[in-house]
Length: 437
Image (cartoon, rainbow, N blue to C red; front, side, top):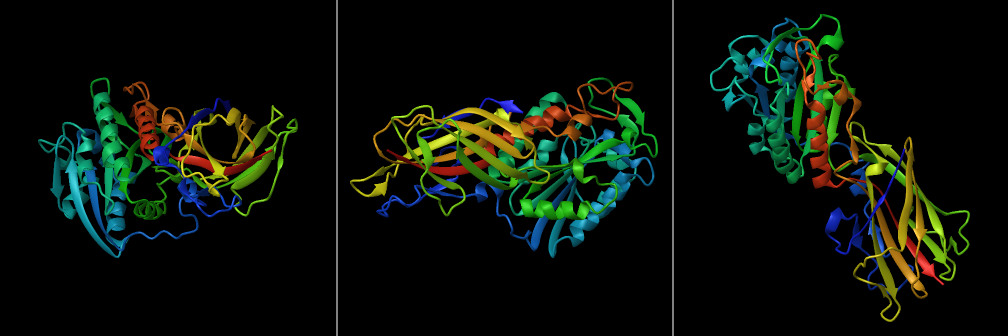
């Protein structure tokens, strides 16, 4: 895959969620690193065990609109089992769980545990006045916070304008609060009517044993990443849960990465100057009288499980520069705009990214430091999972894709864009020192 790489130069340390903290300033040595690289902002806290809270508030919201009744009609359906299983998980998955239950639709109403369990039975649960008419998922988002886990069970059938409102609410109430969103799809047996499509309600009955005919319901999970991971670890033990139908949206896309830099074969004025202890720091010397030099950058990475993939055409390279000030014997405390390093091409083969960086350093002899970070564009950087496309339809009807979810792909794509806008995920970073001669 190939794409154009966007070069963005930042002049403010706080902008774009930088991966650095100032280091080496005022130490008096040019050998000190001009930047300290925090790789955990790319891969998270790798190697640390999940430590979900011992005491946690859990709110379980069941969509009580008419379309959901069809999941409860077939006796022994996956949905039937799920209602019992999610209740058990919330009761025993944490040392001190504080669980509350709600049914929602046009409005939201707190209910008791016993009534929640009746959601597995087709009946009055899905026909209560003031609730069953519309699916307003945004109602449940006002109570999101890092000390609480919100689990929302729904078929995601909403009007198009409602989806836009929901995405904006998730952006503000979830991503804006540094919370994670996870989406689990569970295709289940179904026998009932489908509402809120672009056509009048229609009847649909799945074929027993033919999973391709099942209709999916979804579990939207909001909260602290460790608590959501714990919830999923319990759920995935059930035979009806396909772990491939699980998506997480957070700042972290990778579980590991390594970077290598080499001069191109045709670079005559560029060479390795000194090896650095930090594997993400590189030191080259450059003859300013020779033009046309370039670096070959390779980033080998390991994707994080269940995170969305990314497209190299939607990557952005952010470069910052510092100069070593000989008079005061320190690296400059500020950054400056630069075109010293210009990306020419970017390609990806599997889990390997490659980039050519042309060098246009025409300054006087001295030492120059650079921090390069690879970020994901919120517009086209993240790739919608294949399973989302498979279960999505722009116009489900009784005769065309009747068991698929209206505008699921559009919904998830917009969620990924909102996540990338707020989280600004990175897929690599490295620092470079150049001794100009």
